[in-house]
Length: 374
Image 1 (tube, rainbow, N blue to C red):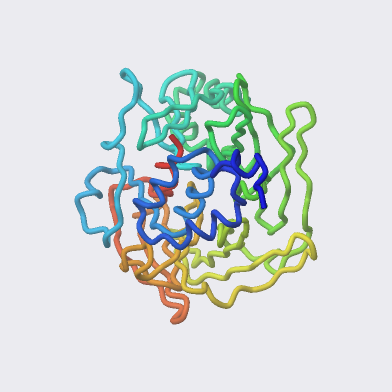
Image 2: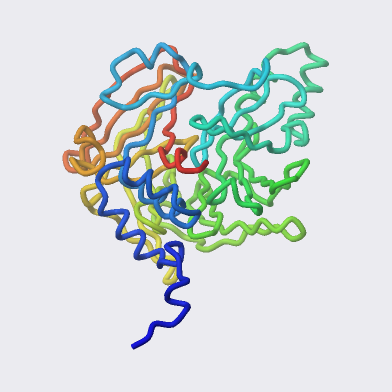
């Protein structure tokens, strides 16, 4: 039987995403997956998703001395590893899609995303476009109070980008504000941020082509970033943890699947430290919540200012030093005391402190998938 001309003209990029995901997930050497990323854009996207689920994220630390200390085999990325253009001095505020979110220390407080592996820079609208920042500067000018710059430094709580900042239609969603989590977004070429009707937002994520947000009561919203008609649409109004005063995170548990992770806190006047964790799976079709009983051999990495993702633990992919059924997280508050790198062991329900730093004001995970976005 003669084969059609379309058979011969088909390319590797035409393979079904599900098939590529299965093939790439069978590879246990990071170098093999990195090689697959160079074939074409569709392979780069699929291999990036697999790479981030199988291989351990890097740990960004704000103080370079941390990189010389024992960090339990984690690869450390510090500000000393980065090169900024000219004499540009920047605050590093978090990460998204493998890029670091940075803010210029001087007026107009330009915002950008920089790939720490390739030094590719994507410019975003400046913070001066926010009325809250303008009011802070006016307050500083009148009162001569230096604390305004600190508030501006911490103005952006978290940023999430669409799949690739190399796409022409990329978008970035942020949580911002000095007195509660609000939402704003920008698209390529925007000169200012566009606000969304929101308040008390705890976390955001980009999954399956959709931006999602979650408030402190556990309500999940879909964010439609149409500049002419931006909307925040509730997907569910009730959750099992509606009145639970805990930290809440979105976490990518598998390709296209999300968990909601609750970090239970021991709240005191001096420190807020985690005591244990709960995880829920939300079915967007039935609107039902199901508690997760097992991490199924994975290790979960939580980061308030970065991506939260589960990776395959054990010998396959993670080098064997990551324990399965464990949650690796940053504990404590730099404004109240030292930051801790800790692990929560799911079966024993015990928390072990892996490292404490007196000097780091910021720690978060950066997914190695950034290397693939060149």
